[in-house]
Image (spheres, rainbow, N blue to C red):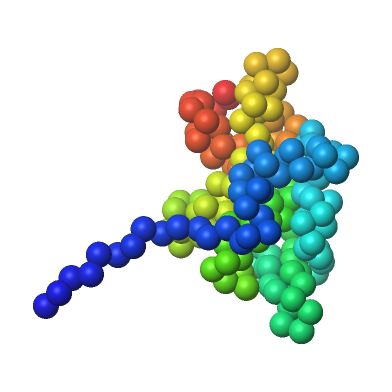
Length: 180
């Protein structure tokens, strides 16, 4: 019996987005296009990236989806209109991550729930991390904590994300405790 070594999981960035492989690259693009970046306007950024964004009621476990239309080749994102606006922002950033990082691997992404405990596939984990970094850039996050507030609720309000997203991002950036 022969054993085959499993290849490392890698994202293949689509050719048209090779210069936009990181959240920092997208923030720079948003600045160049005159979009709000404090916090970043992810809906407008999606449009700049050629993604149509639709808000529709979906079952509660469905956060959103991103699909390439077969006839036109256009990318369409659907976001659950019943979710809180902060969750919608995270969904949009998450789907942008799929478009930037994973569209060479697949042309359809359906996100039921964002698994925060790591029990999802590698593309979902990567899309969540990418979305968090896009919505809460490290430099802006640190500056806000140092100059304005270290309260989770204040940070969440500043970046228009959930308290849970702030806690996860803070941990990733090396912060500890209830308040940062």
